Amino acid sequence: MTWWLWLLAGLALLGFEMLTPGGFFTIFFGVAALIVGVLARFGLAGPAWMQWIWFSGLSIASLLLFRKPLLAWVRSRDVKRPDVDSLVGESAILLEAVPEGGVGKAELRGTSWSARSVDGIGLPAGRRCRVARVDGLTLWIKAD
Image 1 (cartoon, rainbow, N blue to C red):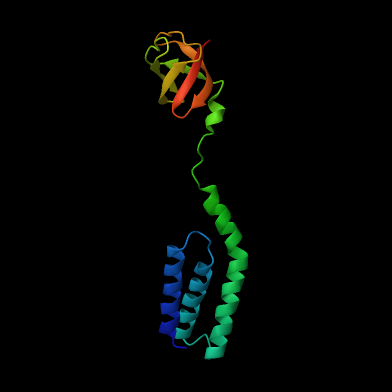
Image 2 (cartoon, rainbow, N blue to C red):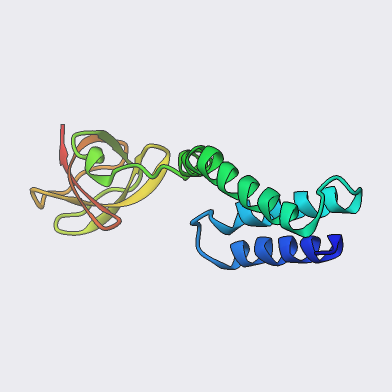
């Protein structure tokens, strides 16, 4: 097989990897095809049957050696979102007064939240309160 066909196949396989959701399979076959194409261009890959052996060996070896670490690296870079349930019991400061049975604003972890009183009583602005539960974007609080 001519060298430019290996390069074309490698680019096509890399493009296919970008179109498919993160399995990281065809990337190794695409890179192996590019390597075989470069080797064939400089006459280092041998005859066609040897090029196919290079391609198969490089593809399988790189898949077995690099796929698991690559997946671990990508997953470790995922954005960690705080667990909303971990907010229960934390201390929030009221930015706006919470009227009886109404909604006010509270600050928790540097973010402004809607706040309601668990007991239904009014709470003044600036007061420190404990989070009793979280309902969507609303903190249910009670006075300390």
